Each structure stands twice: as C-alpha cells, then as structure tokens.
Image (cartoon, rainbow, N blue to C red; front, top):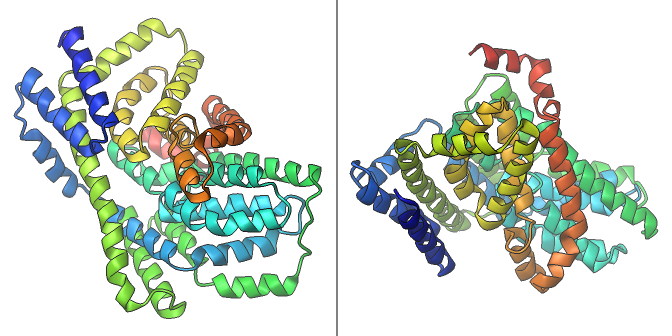
Length: 435
C-alpha cells in the first residue's frame, strides 16, 4: 500500500476512535477493510481468527480469572486486606501509605484491573489516609499510582494474555515479574514512608491482638495466591487449571465461608464478569485478525528493518521502546495494546538480543506506568470519577509518582537481571535456552 492511502486509513481509524466507536469495531472493521483492499485473503479471516481464539489452549483461564476478580471485588475482601495490612505495617513511619500500595497491588493482581481497584479499594483507603494525617493530594496520588501496581504478579490477566499472544511461557513471565513488581512497590512505598516522616504523620501502635484477629479474618483468602503459585511453578497444574482452582476457591470462600455473596447475587456477578469477558475476547479476536494481516504483508519485518537502519544500538532502542510503549499505554487499554503492539515489537527486540521474557516484563511495566501518564492515562480518569477531582489537578498530583515509576521502569529495562534473576537461580532460564 502506498503512503497516502495508508495515512488516510490511519486517520480514519483514529477519527473513529475519537468519535467513541468501540475498539473491537475499529480493529475488526479495519482488519476486514485491509483484507478487502490490499490482500488476497478473504475478509472471512476476521471470523476465522475469532473462532481460532475461542479454541485456543488456555483461553478458559480468561473468563475464570475475571469471574474470580469480580467475586472478590463484590465481597469485603478489600476491607480484610486493609485491616491485615494496617496491623502489619501501620506502626512504621508512613505505614498507612505502605498499606495503600500493598492493598492496591494485591487487589489488582487478583481482580485483573486497575479500574476495579481504584473504585473498590480507593473509597476505603482515601478517608483512612486523610484521617491519619496524609494530605488529600498525596492520598489521591498514591492510590491512583498504585491502582495498576499488581499487573506483574500472579494471577494477573495481562501476563496471561501477553503469554498467549506472543507464545512466551506464562509461568516464566510470572516468575520474572516478581522482582520488577517488588521494585515498583518499593519505590512507591519508600516515597510514602519519606512523606510520613517529613509530615510527622502519627503511626498506629503495633497490637499483636489486632494482628492475630486480622489474620483469623483473612485466613481463607491467604492460600489462594499460594495455591496458584505452587501449582503452576511446581508443574502440578496448568494456567487454565489454576484459573479453575481460583474460581472455585473464591466461590466457596465468599459464598459459604464468609457468606458475603448470596446465591441470589451470583447471577448478577456472573453477568457483570462475562460482559467484561466478552469485551476482552472480541477485542482479542479482531486484533488477532489485524495481526494476521500485518504478518501476511510482512509489516513487522519492514518495521524491524526501519528500526535497525535508524537506531544504532540496544541502549537507544530500549529508550525509544519505553517512550513508544508509554504513549501506547496512555492511549490504549492494556489488552488491546498487547494484541496489537506486541507482535510488532518482538521481531525488532530479537534483533537487539533482548530476552523474550525480559521484553514481556518491559512491555507490561510500560503499560502499567502508561495508565498514569497524562493526558489520557485511564487511571487518571477513573480517579477523577471516583474522587471527584478535576483531571488537570490530577495531572499535577501524579507527577512525583510518575517520575518514580519511570525511574523504576528504566532500571527494569536496562538491568535485565532484575527480571531474569529468579529464572536463573531456579534453572528455568537454562531450560528455556535449550528449547
């Protein structure tokens, strides 16, 4: 396709998105239009790809993990997490800020979305932080910044979808994400502690009785992530089976042990979760069709050739990759970005000898930070709705947190051992290289 028609199509797609056209309609319609205009492949390929996705191994993990997340978000799981975190860390300077980061991280990992975290947990954390002496501006910033801090941890849906789209081992991605995720948490928590010390925010005295009580209250939730971790890394269950275990476990604990979700509510929870499943799967299916077109026209190879001719070395490539992915994460939801952009980036990264697992962590961490990036990072707009704070004011509020996350992102990008260390010591990296 010549440059002029290509530019016209890109402008058409961007205009459709700006007018509020659903993402799947733009991607699917764009794929069908491209197949019809510049390819010998039938437009039926869009439907074929959607059917192929529905039969893909491990696809059942997506609805099951989403259902688990909705069960937890509809219950009082967030309150139990906050109580336990306060009992464990409330006594240290800045402890309430550390609690906010940890609770948001765990809740995002379990529920699969920062939007759910900010809405469900933010309403509880905000008044708690303000009441303990943290400024409203700081409290808004740390909750908004932490809203997507669990993207790299088990059982994050983003990691599963990235692994499925790129063919990267999902277990390796989860293991590789532990230290980078911990680095992001430590940066945000450290900032919270410095703020607490500088503002002389009162601390909560440590109480062994409260700690024991909070552990008793949450004891049925604690085994869930460990069951998934041990099952996957021990080779006992696949990711799809882990998703089934998590859904059944959440169903049993929330409905029969805690009894916070009644049988009459299950239908409503299932409908809400499956609406999200449908939205994600239809975006994935249409995006795979678009990816198929790009592969058919050798677009990744052409992009790779252009990159190699203009970028001198790996250092510059990583910097440009970070800038590009921050923009992508700011403009697109994480699932659309994975299926559309990841297949384009992987070939170029391979030329610069970037480990595929390390690339996955860079990719996901960038999208995580992109959620906080002005002007249209999704976390900003969710926080705007949840806390009724003007978006322009939020831009100023999140700048210190954004700078911290960008610093962590650069460390993750330029120090691959942060991502690959656990793979090395467990022998999974050697096994991967042999394969």
